[in-house]
Length: 332
Image 1: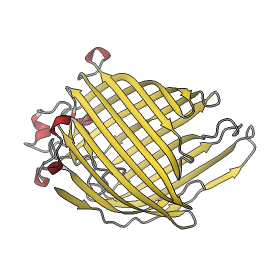
Image 2: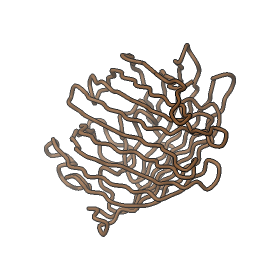
Image 3: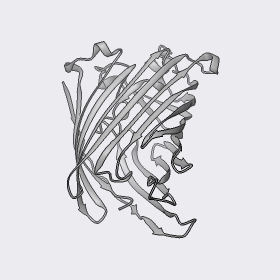
Image 4: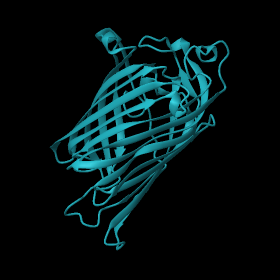
């Protein structure tokens, strides 16, 4: 069993938040811009910015979840660029919800091959230039439960491929770029007491999509994912957070849509998609605690695995990660 522990220094360059009660149809709104430098082995020195805007409902007695529109951007010394937009906007007093994520990027990415036991020395670096997104229009069934259609798209080309590598060989679909167009369904359940710093409740999101050549997709494949999170307050703002995430794909799955573990949200300590295959599963536990003002700390531990198919999962291929971090509360 392989273990990795994350260590690092996070330097805060700008940390500014503005929110006030203001009369715009009797609504409360806010904007929170944050910018910070960071360093990882695959990016070098970099600067990232994240802007969250929110608009709270006019009649908070019947519906209390705010609209959110988040924008993020990153630029690194290796000339990597990433721009993203994440909407969560409600209509009709919460009866409808527009949710999803869209991204434009030119971001050199590493690939070690598929499977749970790829060697570190097998690392290849290539540069995808792509636009992709998952957009859902969700209908509320009851309470915080929403379901609705999902539209998925991706247009990707690949540059700077290493000579004599797996990517150049074309063995894996999508090695020379891909075009994905498909549809499916999305389900969300949210009972958290806060979207910024929850101390109780559940958040569950499931997505499935089918990409077909008949829909103008270059490859025919299906994909699903489920992400479940539970928050439990211990005392005050001390919180235990648990997360389980699973992904699966079948058919001619392109390189860009393989399932992976590693990244800045789950299995931190591993580079993004350090291990990939047609299925992945990971679990994480966090202990979050207040430090001072809007700063909070976190200790986390996680475990995950990738395999070709679910029947192949076993304890000897599990990967582990653990560490500590700093959190900033956007909205009290």
